[in-house]
Amino acid sequence: MQDIEINGTIIKPGEHKKLILNTYQLHTKTTIEIPVHVYRSNVEGPTMLLSSGMHGDETNGIEILRKIVAHDDMQHLKRGTVIAIPVINIVSFLYGSRDLPDGRDLNRCFPGNKNGSLGSRIAYDLMKHIIPLIDFGVDFHTGGAKINNYPQIRCVYSFPENVALAEKFSPPLIIDSSYREGTFRKEAAKKNKAILVYEGGESLRFDYNAINEGVNGCLRLMKEYGMIDTDVPPNPCVKITKGTWVRAKMAGLFHFNKANGSYVDKNELLGVICNPYGDIEAKVLASISGYVVGVNNQPVVNEGDALVHLGSTE
Image 1 (cartoon, rainbow, N blue to C red):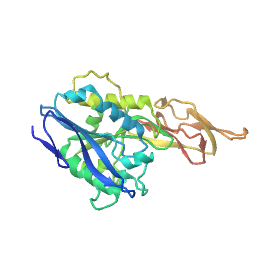
Image 2 (cartoon, rainbow, N blue to C red):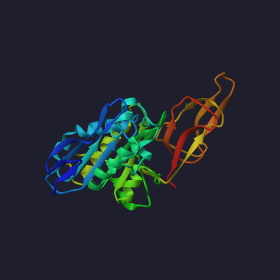
Image 3 (cartoon, rainbow, N blue to C red):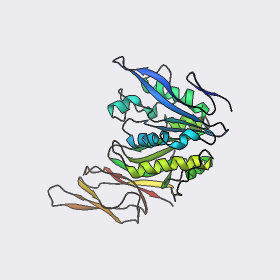
Image 4 (cartoon, rainbow, N blue to C red):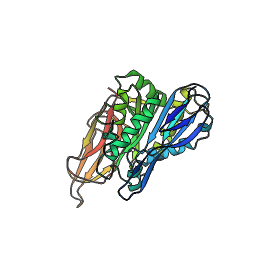
């Protein structure tokens, strides 16, 4: 096995090193750093990236990677290499916000520019120092503000290797999701590096089911490639081919009466919207038969708001 190098730091086979991807300076002259864990076996094998905290409020993904880097098996890899970046967007994590201080979404800044904005510089460093080293990876995300996503892997079904990777991870749901411009996974795909996106839970709120599913998925993936020996329970997964949002037909207080991840039939009652003065109630019905992929947990909704994300297997 050859040595690998990240931003001037050499990591030899059999070593575990914590290094800094790069340093960036804020307007207060405060220096921020992006820590990276690298775990290497002495035996040849795949190089896997695990990353989280692309958005600073996505705490479930950060907790998943905290548990992974603390796992005993990481210190004794049977083969291959794991690169783990628990918090990519350090500055937004400090602020507890989704976006960077200049309002940019880091996951729309790729492939980046070493002389560009803060987000563009971080994206550039990931593309330059990390992507060339890996074979595949999983990028951990969380639903947006008040959106609770049921644990799911998003990948592009037209690329069979991505689907095979998702099946090895084996989350409850696998969703066909096309690439978006400026994202980490699209730019990685241009370099023939498969990056899966894991979504689970709600921003700034721990969801232990989503966290446990994410941890077990990582361990399954490593077990499938012979990187660890730990037994991980199998997990049946459902492949979603298309989805739609059920939207509010009136404003008011939304009461959801189904479980996230459950299967519903078309026209089945999902919940009700009540007028706060008690004299109006509107039923919210499923527009298709399928699985509840995500739920808007905000109780006060306006007409047209997205309420329930449904995914179909047909």
